[in-house]
Image (spheres, rainbow, N blue to C red):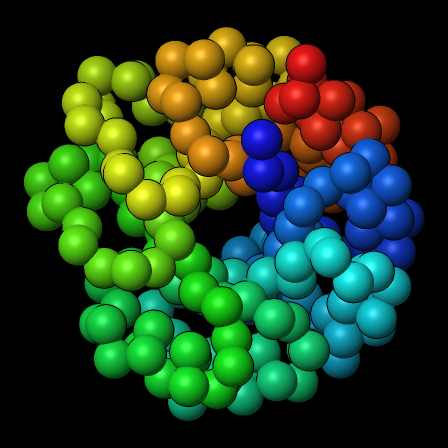
Amino acid sequence: MFVKVCGLRTPDTVDAAVEAGADAVGFVFAPGSVRLIAPAAAAALVARVPDGVETVGVFRGQPIDEVLRLARAAGVGTIQLHGDEPAEHFARAAAAGLRTIRAISAARYTASGHAGDERLLIDATVPGSGATFDPAELPVPPTVDWLLAGGLRPDNVAALIAAFGPSGVDVSSGVESSPGVKDPALIRSFVAAARP
């Protein structure tokens, strides 16, 4: 099970995720997020991440030139785009040597389907809200690798993995002691619970 811990902003939480065995760590560059981090601060954290652990920059509704500039400044290897970004944005990211993840709500995925080649992250309607969604909202799961997000916590992740059958999981608010403040103990518990 691929595990991504997102919205990290401090050395101790990055270290906790890496030491617990997370496959990816995420840094949020979406304006207005309580988890927003400056590119220079993210770069210092990315430097702590060993080879083999994916570093992801998270963006929402930002111009692709800004996304690429921030990703370069932070030194992340992957960009995660939320919203209705066109295929051209993903192609430009790939041409710049970045991996990509398309984040989409379960409702939008079900309504539109998705034929792109990007990895998918399927989230609740309001990303970062800590809300889960019902498996009935995703009657036909993707056939490509995809990450389940939305309301995952150490105490529910195993059951939700069983219900949805994703390739991986993504957690942010579910390992926080307060909004935007990650708890190293919860990070360790979550990674362990996702891989029983």
